[in-house]
Amino acid sequence: MELKKLLPIGLTTLFLMTGCMDNDTATDEREEIKNQLDPNGQLQAPADESAENKLGYVRYTKDEIDNDNENNRSISIDRTEMANMITRIMLRGNSFEEVATLVTDNEVLIAYEKSADTNSERATEIAKKTATSIMPGYFDVYVTDNTNLIDDIQSLHNSRTTDGNYDNTIDNIIKEMNKTTKNTNE
Image (cartoon, rainbow, N blue to C red; front, side, top):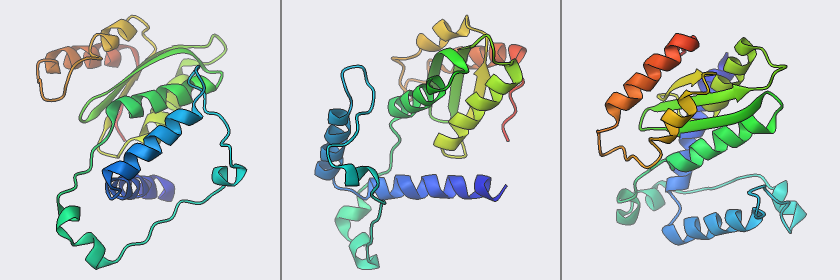
């Protein structure tokens, strides 16, 4: 139970620390991660074995954070990367055959085809726990094993949170998800 309370704090801290990097550093790190992926999108072992086992650490003083450049920084979430991470983690196990994930400004929608040997309750639990372990706590997570909704979720992949035109579609998808799976936001 304590882990559930600490996880959102840890993720928020992670996002804050990420927001503290300058753009060049963030771009360089993003490129380094992309270079570690092989053409199939699988993570390759780093060339330097010690980098894989290295702890993450930063240290700042109050003066470093209180400067003008720091005050102009904003924290943002790469929704596509979060959806990618959730989907890939779910598919690495043996419980799912196909997963579609959509991350909006405050919801995560996951539709999946579960493996034949996985029961529905277990699949729902895995999907929800995967999303809640990755996303900040204010996100509502909805999951379903209704594979017809995979295409509905995919239809929104080019939408933007600033459009607002997709709200009705998301509400309809959530209603359909709730018909097939018990979605409680704990």
